[in-house]
Image: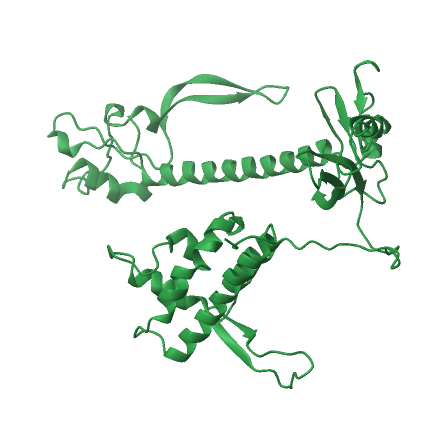
Length: 379
């Protein structure tokens, strides 16, 4: 029978529900009134090699903070199965300490793994690996960029073309790539092995026939950056073709990216505008995208709409939907223009007229650039 600890006397009195404990000279409590986790049945004996051996105790010992909680002769609500507060705090502090140690070890191992397995160039690969197993030379295909055999293919493919069919349109574009070395499907993809000037982009040259329906990629040139140090000779004639599609959605995107309250963009008035007679300061007009948003909000629940092509995606497009030209043309069209010209209360007439004037410009340019033949519209 363990003796009651002096520091836990009040807690024992509340747990045992005995009022005469103070009058007793010696107080003992049966070990059966304690849970098994509150009793220490073994004690550890140190070995010579730093380990411990658990040996059964001759006399049982209570763990620190143990309180009697099992009272079988009392009603069931007098017994408690919860652990002591001091024991819970001890284990919680231990768990917190072990959790912090585990987090630190995990972060350390993650940083070591990242530093070990990240390969930036071929020299880094040689420094981190003693040897690397590559397939046989007959299976290995190294593709740094343009192949000589591809030019032979182009000459053979166009050998049967007539002089009219050989009139082509040259298109140039830039493709951003990762400046690293990858091995996939028996191929090593390494645009540039120079660590001082890594390849960040690919200069693509595409050709398409002006009179036929064939097109192909003529060259892919990996490079670090693209500059124009050697200009085209001014003695040769160059035809510049503007892509109205790109300009249309970029104008709409710039309009949406305005940082002011009502997304107002300023433009020059094109009526009676002549460069020779231009006077400064220039007269600027404002076009607010809020007029288009308010027009959509006012007609959203109506059956009959003045601007039926305005939708949620047209007025509030996402980053991917901003590249869709069809959504741009839902804003810049004749129905939206006619709806903006009708007065309504939420915007004053001056601002509304400036917005409708701006919306009128792009549909006009779109119709002009989409004229494919000189006889279009003539009947």
